[in-house]
Amino acid sequence: MTALGYPKWAPGDRLNTRPGVVTTITVKSAVSLIEVSQMLTQGMSGGPLLDDNDAVAGIIHKGGPEEGRDFAVHIKELEKWLKIRL
Image 1 (spheres, helix red, strand yellow):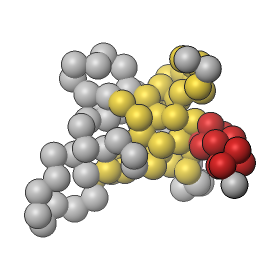
Image 2 (image 1 turned 180 degrees about the vertical axis):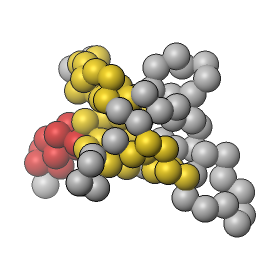
Image 3 (image 1 turned 30 degrees about the vertical axis):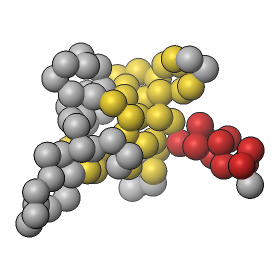
């Protein structure tokens, strides 16, 4: 898995890529989450979590030094939400 984002972005910064692995898939508040090994920091929320084929597997949700765990919302949750809205 590769997390993409702009943590602590400043003008001139480039896209940050962080490789890692899925540590678990869990459900919290009825939402499927992907927990990953890489540190996801403030500013990466909303960025994609890519699988080994560069397909979007999730959307970065939370992480950082105070969190203790780093999560992305599973892409299937977004797909379900879009079906309801469209």
